[in-house]
Image (cartoon, rainbow, N blue to C red; front, side):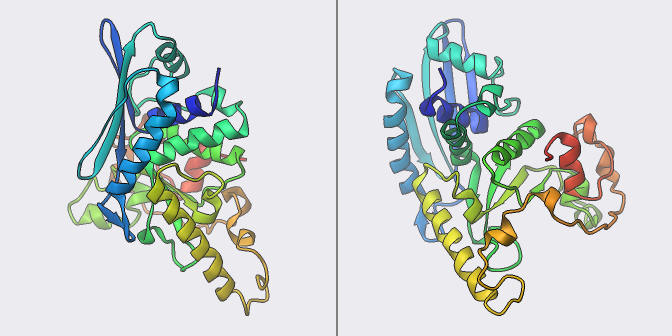
Length: 303
């Protein structure tokens, strides 16, 4: 039976988990990366430690086994637990995740898409706690355009799944920087400098901070920063639009609460990139794209 605790645990596993099976036992290991010890004045290691205690306390009755956690590594923490292969929770996790064993292959279970709003949000918080971050450098162009980045390595299908689950909760994605040569290195600058595979990195799903407040985090410092930058977006928006004929006295949602298919796209052609046919790309995207929206639509994120 799906409930908020299971949904949250599944989100963490799908985002950054590994399932390690032996003849008798299964170990679940979840990594929680963090970029720096201090981000925007927040002590991330202290926050991670405090939040892990809360998470372990929350999941203890669900897991029904000792949960190990470690925050000793500088940019990474993890939690783990082991149970017998026949345990009900292990069988449930394997069923939801189709017996896959790594975040490289996991998809969002179909049961999450048909779940309650609360369970959908808990699942996304699980993913966000282990894959997302917010900081000043995530700003787009203007000071009311601070964003959350959800970073997904390798897994193209999961990237689209996340965008679609956000859509079900009425949270628009501002942009997706797909790990594709046309999107990451459109002008071939890095390629011509000799860094031919510069494009081969994580996908970045970018969401306006105040829009992501509908989801939020369970990691303490991330939630503090989310509120800080969402409030900053609203404050700066009000200042920037006080003399605007179009947006004066209008909420920031008039500009930010828009799905890409409701926005105009500048018809700008990108030059062909030599890496478009790279074997490191999935075969379905080994071709030319002029913008991320065309790619998103083709991969299944659409109205």
